[in-house]
Length: 125
Image (cartoon, rainbow, N blue to C red):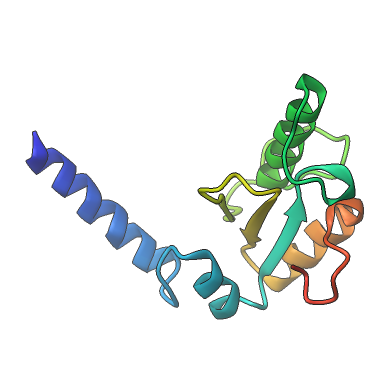
């Protein structure tokens, strides 16, 4: 059984290296390596860190799904064919999801489409 897991791990590692050769799956390292394609979004209004109600959990889910699919706020559609993007989640369930877009242009489009979800700090953090 562990042989299957080792094979899966090896395949996933190889896929990662092909898609993101500049760094390991570590958020702060990827932010630096892909700074031209990186953007961070807050998952709740007002930079609130944790959802406390069902409505807030719905907002978090909506924002996450919207950013992953690359749709403008309020719109629904699947991601365009061939679009690649990576969303990084955090173990401590923080209020943000980092996104590495397929290109700087896509990153800019995402930023523009979801301005209200961006951090206010000039560094984007």
